[in-house]
Image (cartoon, rainbow, N blue to C red; front, side, top):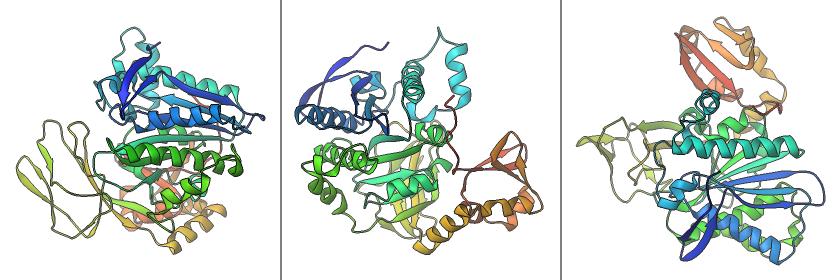
Length: 392
């Protein structure tokens, strides 16, 4: 078991241990599980969770369900770095989890952290009753307004609709091994929340506001029991009166040993134009390939996600996709030539690349197939809407 640590974070001393808090409510369900600090230099979520648990205790707020707070990369949190050896939020795959057992006595720092987190989550899922709501609290290296990231399932969309802040769909297509993507594979609701810039105290406030709104939206806490509920609602919705959904059009991935430098001053969601200078790679200019909005520009040393370019999704597209999925119209895709379903994985379509040339990726997105993987000359599209299954 990784030992608790004492650190100074946002001008206060805090104690960080694996389970930051646990509250058992008057009923057995729902259960909200929130994680802070999966990246060690993103401490705002840890501070916020401790504040919320203290408020629940001091104000004797009753919960209907259960609420757990879990800290992420404790070793990295102690050093205020993103990670020690490998990004803890990029190794959540079945292959990696199998490795935890096969190489039990020779694990690196992040694998030890992962093993503890995995067993805690698995125990909660086996002990408590659903529905389960997972929340992963983050901050960014660039200045940003708060936003949400989700895998594009209808359940995730419905839950995220409780927050009037920008929501990014399908980020899992561009990232390998995030925790929430793994959680989604078992049918659970999971939201990533980006609260603001790493070292700004307002990021802690935004996390606190989000946690209270999330607990109310999950029907774990009654709105009337949260004294500052209206303030929390306003503090997040002041950036946007309505919820806008965005899709990712491009990601720049930093290669090993590449010297990458982002142009200073970019803010999240800032408008950019085609051919605008965004960054340098080994002293070579990196220009925007098209108009859009800059998303998560990298202003820290660790990490290989240089920047993303996003664009807004229309309400019409969102409505049509929801309608098609509710009617299970995705089965039409299986009738097309060059498209077959994988017998052992019913949520996966295997597509001949020649067929894919005539079927734009957006068509698969419309029917709920978000993740696209190339294996042995075939394209695999993975559906995000699925029933709850046993966590393994």
